[in-house]
Amino acid sequence: MKFSRHHLQKILNLVAAFFLFSSSIFATPISIPADLMKKNCTNVLDLAGRVWRQKIEIAKKSIRFRGVDSENVEAAYSAMTPKEFDLINGAQVWAERRLIPQAMNGRIPDGPALILDLGSGPASSTEIISFYSRPDWRIIGYDFAKPLVDRANKLSAEGAFKNFKGEIIRPEFVQQSITAPLRFSNRHIIPRNSVDFVNSSGVVGHHLDKGGLEVFAKSLWYVLKEDGYAAIDSGPVNKPEDIIMAMESAGFRYIESMNSYFIDFRPKLIFQKISSATILPQN
Image (cartoon, rainbow, N blue to C red):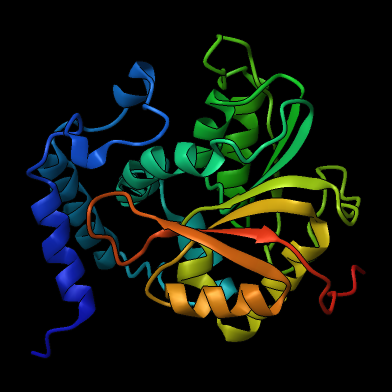
């Protein structure tokens, strides 16, 4: 069997599992709050084992959720039960609880802001963004699987999201592809130069083909304000170098990579909008 970077990533995941979360090796500029930390599995080996077992069970049901065919991926995620999705998404949540606070830190204006969360699923990443948010921020999550969007909107309506001060935050969630012109929950297209910060989790690096990545980058340039920031996930389909090339071609400056642990082949990439580019028509 050929040994690939994918296999090395799995080995490193296991190595990282032996370190406690409190170790300085996982330290971040913004320390993870206690109530968020409690939601993490403190035994990473246990988490990895449960995710692995769940993947086997999902494979037995012939659910294939990896790939760039949007219809197949949407159908696969929609076919999962909430428990199945939460377990499959466990490793992603583990990483995002470390990466999102770093990505947000110092990059959002001190005042009203418009924040987009792409690939929000049932609001796992949106919950983290909401914790660090202000009540005057407008947060919109996007996913193409209707059951996940419905679940997230239900949580928001029930007041399930709170910031670090205990204030209720009510994000909105929209069902759509992130390569289509991004819309508000009322279906109006988001205006040019109106978004302060964009986060993507487990979608750009996993589910966009080359053409989709280029369209996505141009669409992101359209909605972000001048000097606005985007924190983009990398993955097995679109590696860091692929995303950097597409984003720089669309008019972004690459700032830095952020790792969830000391060696990470799928880092979150930070970009800043800096220059004019060919704009995707917003129809």
